[in-house]
Length: 436
Image (tube, rainbow, N blue to C red):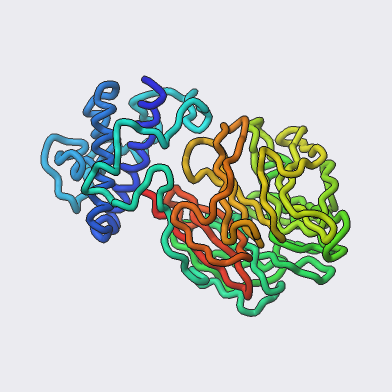
């Protein structure tokens, strides 16, 4: 089986699973006709291309109830099945709950780690020549996101408990399986201030309670910006980093590190440590740190902004030269990998929205070069990054604010990355990822 065919099998499973959920909850019938036809057409093409390497019965088994729409036959039996029924419960193996079944056993293959494969290049299918498909779809720059929604899921930061801006971060620190919201700000006092909005809903239906300040024992002085959560020491729980701000605009302020001394289900943070693991030479206020394994070596590297009255603003890269459990950061490199952007309170955020296996960069804050969210596509690989020139508000986004702080998270548990954008006055905009 070729790499492209393995990828087709991966996508067939993903899209079939999504279609089955949409059939079950009735949302498929509420889609525009063009999007319904497009999703069915995409699955049919994947099915047809895989027939040469995967038995037809196995493909129908993978697709389950979706095969009724796509192929016009029952997924698991030879008899007809109602669209509204669930052919996955007919006594045969359920591929969505029986993860041990795999028609193509290949545990050593990872589509995200194959730099020679480009999922955006699929010569076997051209949505632009399919009159039934959404005419606004472009495989190079697809429109993934819905229109922005103001303060969704009950978010209310109107009290401005921690300053005017709200710089969002989402993490599960209480072990209940859903993502809670944390909000930092440009806080010019000499104490830590993090707003915590507990998710009292569920992993797929979030609802946020009123905010409290400094949960899980957070304390300390001189912090400013949004929190970055990462398991920096490899012990299975999320630690926290926040930018330090002791001199307002200038000086070497760096990062404050709050080690999680609790557990994955019950966080507790130690007193902050300034500039741990060799971190040094960060000028001005760090709006929000971004941790990502940008070079594919298994540990988390660090990106920060750099700003003061006396220097040009930009981004800095701190390579982790240690390991996943014992980090050590090298001296920072300005404008790494060809990244060039100027602005105040720059906020880097990474996500693989184009699903090519490497991490792309999104930069918010006060981005004077572009406004809104600046997008740097990673045109390199997961091990050797290289970034294209910036583009404003990609993937159908419409973020009309210069002070915009992005955070990606799968808030509704549908397998894709949604976007939260914090702006001034405690406002959060939510852009749902509507990719198939």
